[in-house]
Amino acid sequence: EAGVAQSPRYKIIEKRQSVAFWCNPISGHATLYWYQQILGQGPKLLIQFQNNGVVDDSQLPKDRFSAERLKGVDSTLKIQPAKLEDSAVYLCASSPRDGPYEQYFGPGTRLTVT
Amino acid sequence: GEDVEQSLFLSVREGDSSVINCTYTDSSSTYLYWYKQEPGAGLQLLTYIFSNMDMKQDQRLTVLLNKKDKHLSLRIADTQTGDSAIYFCAESTWTGNQFYFGTGTSLTVIP
Image 1 (cartoon, rainbow over the protein chains, first blue to last red):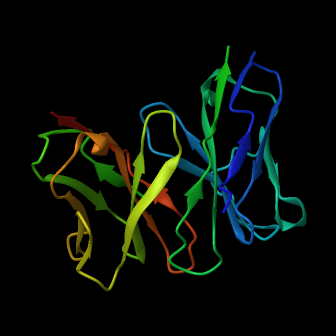
Image 2 (image 1 turned 120 degrees about the vertical axis):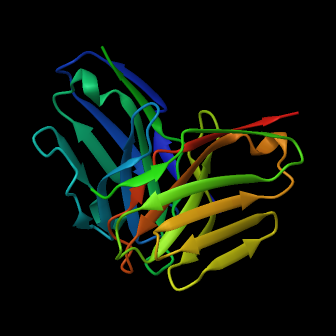
Image 3 (image 1 turned 135 degrees about the horizontal axis):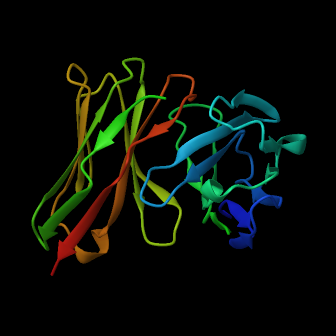
């Protein structure tokens, strides 16, 4: 079974530029998550989708971050414009619809904003 | 968000047992998880426990839950150098929403 795929693996941009990350979850997983992990901290949930609907986006900075999940499969996370404090690893995870909601994580995208 | 606290560092000798602790504040948490993160990699689920359980054992891993004190622990028996990593506890509600991860404990195993 293929795991969660993410691209790109690394990205370096200047502040005020835009960037987009892509995630392909495990086939059949209804739920998809985007996390931000700042160096030395635990992952912070940004947004959670079930199929193509948003379940929780309470911690997503909506003035600059946006995410979509078209057709309930792949997802993109965009930052526009980026700030220095957005430097982090962006992790995508997917899980089955029903409990215990074990999440399978992708390798992450390391974003550096200069 | 909810607070999920862990001690930052733990160092043990190879062959000893490791105990990693976690405290959480959300009394509505239903599932509690332990994840492992190796350098440069995503997180890997090790085990989980449902909130109506006190203990769960899975090979070298033992999870203890004290719901009254909101305290979760992970014991790794016969710790090996390959167990060196960062360990995160996490919690979620019954519906699988509101995932909160702890700050992570860096485990170093000394040969």
